[in-house]
Length: 423
Image (cartoon, rainbow, N blue to C red; front, side, top):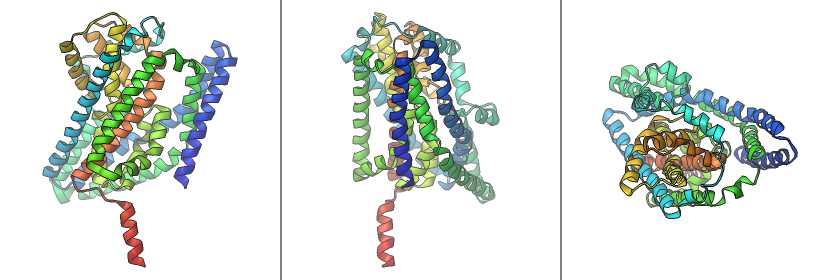
């Protein structure tokens, strides 16, 4: 009941956000709109910062405990291998789907005459000036775990946690007191999650109101074709993910979607995967995934398995090339796909990471990176679906790996057995 009440509050907040933003957009000057958007987004900032407060300790504690609970290094290698097999396959499918759609529909020819957000584009381009192999390595490997946690560099925290967990597993009984302490700490942090989630409707309201106030409802018509093709890609990706998930999980898929509906709604509204990481951990365990699998697979998924973002990267990169009249042959596009496969892993947790990777890739293939201005005004609305897809992809991945490991229970069936036994 409490979870349903929060979901209703979030939906109400979305509607109120749209109405408030639209009223401000129609009845205010540009300066007033800018001031309103800046101030109202503080509500979203509060919620996101509260969530970010617990991301680093939660990833560290759950991943270390998850690895330790796998029991031995052989189990760690086996589960890790299955997890990465799913992640790499899903990433390639997502990238290739974006590639096929953009070549079939040629959305770049539709938006080539649209004036974009040049100021926003210059700001993003400035952030990618130093994007290189060196920067990629620095994003992956931490020089200080304290610095990684302070900056919420999820990929760096994952790397340290994996080393820590493997070392704890190798030490066996000697490390059990530390593992137990981290297990207790992870449960305390998950308790905090419940308190933090009460702020979700405020965060949703702020994000939606600011976006609509700045861009207005007209943005949906302004980029109708581009947005339609993108949504078609997202729909196809969902069909592929859910279809493969159904082949493995069978009739548990609807139950999984019901379990993750609340985190999915929050991710969609706030465009933040981080905002739902703690809650998603909790819901997947309630679904029946063993805690040791969830705490191992999900943090890795947040770094390596961003299906929605991956599909968008090839879609957006080649769209910009089309808008600039640049023809890329198939060989070049395949090379771009492989480059995106690698570079996208180095910016996990970076704000607007998809756009930053797109800009860096455009520069690498001699496509004017300022072309990002064409799609920047609508990016917030695309990001809503990208983020939701990332959540779905990681949830299915966690459930599938749990099934492969024989670590997926059915809580509803177990509760029925308990009732029958008590009778």
